[in-house]
Amino acid sequence: MGALANHAFAKMNGIGNEIVVVDLRDSKATVTADEARAVASPAGVPYDQLMVLLPPRLSGTEAFIRIYNNDGSEAGACGNGMRCVVRRLFEKTGQTAVTFETRAGLLNCWQGPGPDLYTVDMGAPKFGWQDIPLAEEFRDTRYIELQVGPIDAPVLHSPSVVSMGNPHAIFWVDDVNAYDLERFGPLLENHPIFPERANITLAHIVDRDHITIRTWERGVGLTKACGSAACATAVAAARLKRANRTVEITLPGGKLAIEWREGDDHVLMTGTADFEYEGRFDPALFANVA
Ligand SMILES: N[C@@H](CCC[C@H](N)C(=O)O)C(=O)O
Picture 1 (spheres, protein in one colour):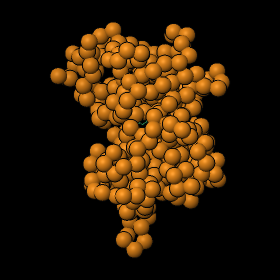
Picture 2 (cartoon, helix red, strand yellow; picture 1 turned 120 degrees about the horizontal axis):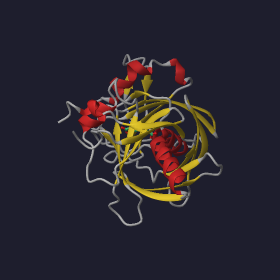
Picture 3 (cartoon, helix red, strand yellow; picture 1 turned 90 degrees about the vertical axis):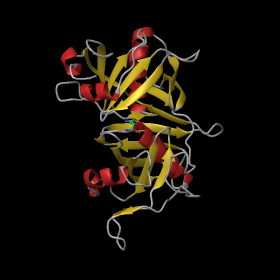
Picture 4 (cartoon, helix red, strand yellow; picture 1 turned 135 degrees about the horizontal axis):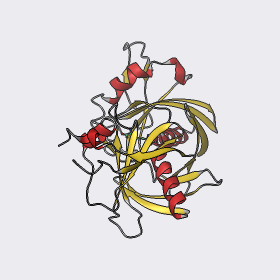
């Protein structure tokens, strides 16, 4: 019946990004794509990302974290989910700083500059076309040739592309609410230029310190917030010299402070994380899971 039947979970959110946290550090089991989809089924626990803590593989780390989207696919990074994991752990253990391993590498996390704030060092962004990845060579990923809509009057075009451990495309617009992201999101997420699909963000640069975004998440759809998209947008705007390296990003669910640190190039994301409820997964959810 798998690892999750009757297992404890915590339902949380990171500024509206729906997160379920499961701690499997005391178990040898892992979670399959089918189990992740079963959790997201109507009788299950709604989530955008399922954060699964597995036993640490490296000394000095607290856990190896696998991140599932609600379509069962896996992601290398999830900023909002990381803050939820960190809050849960800090409240249980009294720790104020931890290191986790994810598929994208090591992430240092610590108590932010306020009692309800958590900071995640999301690592260094990558800009190479093979790192994002793109299906064909683009020497300059600050803008790539990609558009939707009529050839002579594209609706969205020339996104910046960045990897934050997961692929992001950022389209610069004047009003993030003026576009049908539910229509264009799936087309762009699955565009052949993105062999691993991509998270699609609309971004409006308000001024050098403030950006507003809305994101269609790979493997999920429209979400209230995407932390890695906020990081990718901040970095892409700074790279274009249109914003400072420290900015406030406004998302539908709330705000995040992003700093693209000089020196080591790491991106620091600070924001809140909210606990909603906890429970145990109903074994019936996994009855048909191999
Ligand atoms: N909500 C996340 C990003 C989740 C992963 C994404 N859907 C992907 O597949 O890359 C965040 O807060 O960063």
